[in-house]
Image 1 (cartoon, rainbow, N blue to C red):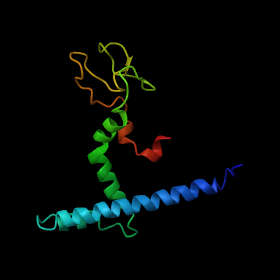
Image 2: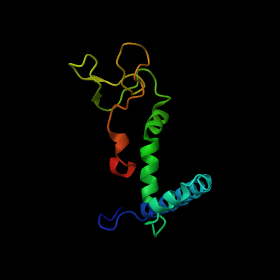
Image 3: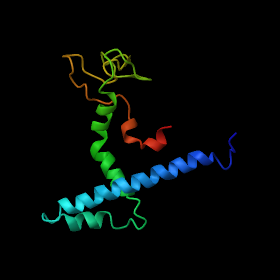
Length: 134
């Protein structure tokens, strides 16, 4: 069983391990950013932006990374979705007057030509951090 107050010890350990892995990954991204911007004068700007991270959690860098990559992440998640796969909520009004389901690879389109606007995300979940979605 699971203690409702203390939680599941195994889940806590996995979360801690995940957080350590994320710290390592974003530390590598930070170091690569500094290395790549050494000569163009942006190194100081990058150091100023992320200087307040005493514990090296790189929370601001994580947020910036997500902002820069959320559109391609959504596309990657749905790239193998079939044509008739459905998303879990009604989205994308077909005629603009009624709600229809996003049935084209879980994406919305304007219906004028195949694939038009197929990169539009049918929800606002891409703006919500993963840990807040569940």
